Length: 243
Length: 260
Picture (cartoon, rainbow over the protein chains, first blue to last red):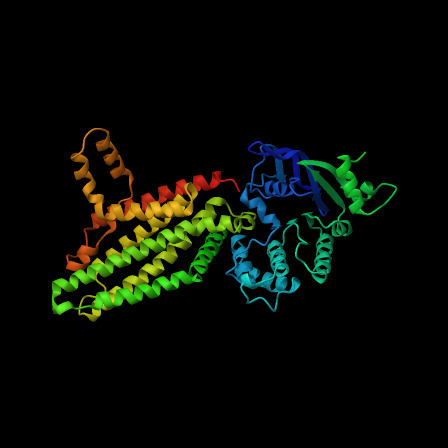
């Protein structure tokens, strides 16, 4: 039995004449935490959009829990947090979670209990009645984390989750990710925060100009010589791959 | 089925909340109140004929307001989702594009209908205050026809927002619907008076364009002529539902092809 939560096989995605993703092959195992790194425009967000079924690959295949992510029912098993907080400014966080719970087809009582629990986890209890338009960037990120966790997903896909979080919120978020990993959840997140990635990930995948130039454990990237992820990341980008 | 209904219910609630928390909706309702009440209550020189003209003008205002609301909410349904990018986290949930379209459409229609019900209630109360019938069968028919027209206008605006820019689509429809409302029934007559390709063009337009005038019961209401026969009622209702369904299917097709 295949134990991967997603598999991307030789995927290309073109936008007109521009190749955003070029022959990408990548997979994520159950309970694995993988950081998705790369410079701006490397194809990370396009890859994530293909993973959640927002766009189709030009060629190649993407499988999510063995199925096409365009099928809406398979997305019941994922939680996605976008790069920017794209939420309805006229709702408060309770209404936002109630709305997404309804869209997920969850029972009203379950949504209510999950909402209470998650608002506490992301520390938005005091701001729960304020409309999202009054939230700071960090608070919106926390609301985003709550909506991604609402349906208790098996796979979390997070696009730049650390953006806008203050140091304390980062620590809480890091702890949350660790707890989720202990529960056997798979987590795939793109980030520019190499320090956080190093602390949290089993594996990293590094993208450059639409191609994956490294995918494997952080330890293998460091090799025998060790060194921090930032230096190694720059080396890999310069070389275009790992020996 | 239960899950499907929960999804649709959540989307309907969202559309309603969005529309009712916008201040422009309240401005419109207050404006309606300020204009409609004096118009429908006026009794110039105590002459019944003149009163009817004021009544008709009030109903025409109701049509104008409801068209404005329908086109506004229909045109904004998805353009605001795209511009604010709220559609990304939404489509990452287990909801299909078809369900999203249907849920948002129904939400907009319910919002437009609630505004319409307010306008008609206002008109009915002022009519009752002048000694008229408050809840006649004709008024009920007029409301149902108007509600069906509103649903059609929302569907047209929604479909147009996928084809053109929101402002272009709304402007085009804001010209098309009143033009059909006032001149639609004269088109066959006009077609007979022109020749060649223009005749065919006018005929084709007559068959394809949405006939807003079919839903207009103002004259019957104001002059007390009574409602239409059941067969006519069903034919007009069927026309409105079928036209809206075709527009929704086209919008669904365009939404599925849209690059996100």
